[in-house]
Amino acid sequence: MTKPAYKTMGQQFGRRSWAEPWKIKMVEPIRIPGRGQRKKALIEAGYNTFLLPSEDVYIDLLTDSGTSAMSDRQWAGIMLGDEAYAGSRNFYHLEKAVQQYYGYRYVVPTHQGRGAEHMISQQCITKGQFVPGNMYFTTTRLHQELAGGSFVDVIIGQAHDPTNLHPFKGDVDLDKLEYLIKKEGAEKIAYVSLAGTVNMAGGQPVSMANVKALRILCNKYGVKIYLDATRMAENAYFIQQREEGYADKSVADILKEFCSYTDGAWMSAKKDHLVNIGGWIAVNSYDLFDALRNMVVVFEGLHTYGGMAGRDMEALSIGIAESVQDDHIHARVMQVQYLGELLIDWGIPIMRPVGGHAIFLDAKCFYPHISQDEFPAQTLAAELYLDSGVRSMERGIVSAGRDPATGDHRRPALELTRLAIPRRVYTQAHMDVVAEAIKAVFDKREQTRGLKMVYEPKVLRFFQARFEPLS
Ligand SMILES: *Cc1c(COP(=O)(O)O)cnc(C)c1O
Image 1 (tube, helix red, strand yellow):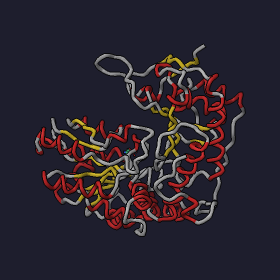
Image 2 (image 1 turned 30 degrees about the horizontal axis):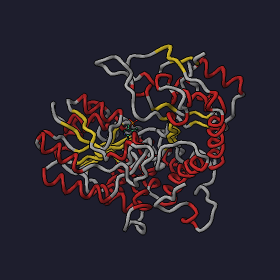
Image 3 (image 1 turned 135 degrees about the vertical axis):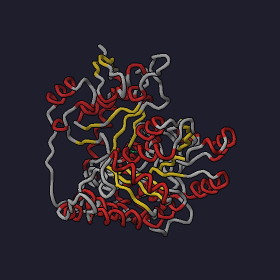
Image 4 (image 1 turned 90 degrees about the horizontal axis):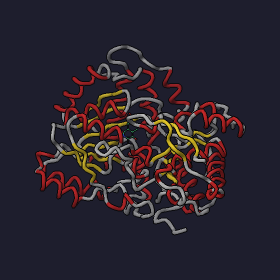
């Protein structure tokens, strides 16, 4: 195993063991269904983990979105909901928390991340403009396209290589960006759509040096930078761990400095902010704020609730403060690293370096004998569920869909099975069980056969497609 360029758990603490910085006050029982029941459930779900009832799942790593555990303080906040239609006190708490921790001037609440993406795209993109960004995200790109924009990927090349150990694989390739600006003209660039960490690249961070240089470049051409801040607390933690000059700064300070190089941000609070639903958009320009505030009443709700209940906004404002506490974010990211390091030690092929929110198994390496048209990543997700009741999801040829022009499968370079870790939900013992389940599936990989698709929806097929084993 190559030594990571950043501090390992042992180096951090000067000892081997590590523990979650919380104790459990309320439990939700889970049970592992018997093998017969798992087999039956998998057949009924057409070998698609999205179609499994959650009751039949033991450890659920389908997504880290809206699945985190709230703290006792957040639950107490739920009881302090002020459900006034206008001017709820909880909105002012939320506004203050975003201003304090992210540093932007004006805040508009939304029901979740895509509500905010819809508004920023409609306000800041005119038809025919380009939106360069550090790798696409599904809902982000869709809203940019619906507004008439074209997304252009300007992430560094290393991000596309699952074995490259670059510490900041989320960085923008500034040459690629400047080339685009010069070629198309600055007036054709809507804004730079920057995300930290980069979800589709495996949760990879952006460095402070990169965002600083990006600001200078964008100032030269008068281009704005808007940030997808969904996992920016995790990104700030990676900066603290890996970037020269930040080891002694708090995650909260790093987060605020990073945001200061951008013009605004949108947020899916279902991720970093430790709530089950919610979002916001925040900007420094009064004119843009005014436009967003006029728009939010049409699509989300009044500008002092934006689709959230008062109690949700209270839990969210408390979650924002908790999300940047060093011990919390350390435990969150280190739990993901812990699982990743176990798998690397056992020679199981995963995407590297390990990102902030999920482990991605490299299904092409896992099953070299299963061709991509026989859905290796889908097969792996199904096998893992069958072995242990652990739920993961496919991020490969099924998710990529078909080319609208030729009707053929899009064949992405990366054929991955994702295990996303919810925040504060599972313990290290659960991670051990997951690692051992993956190992068990890995050990019998040579006997495993692929799948055939027997039902295929026209759009976003990965959600509802059905499969059968190849005989
Ligand atoms: C989840 C997510 C979104 C969309 O947010 P929702 O709350 O699911 O609407 C946007 N960007 C990133 C990076 C995400 O992970």
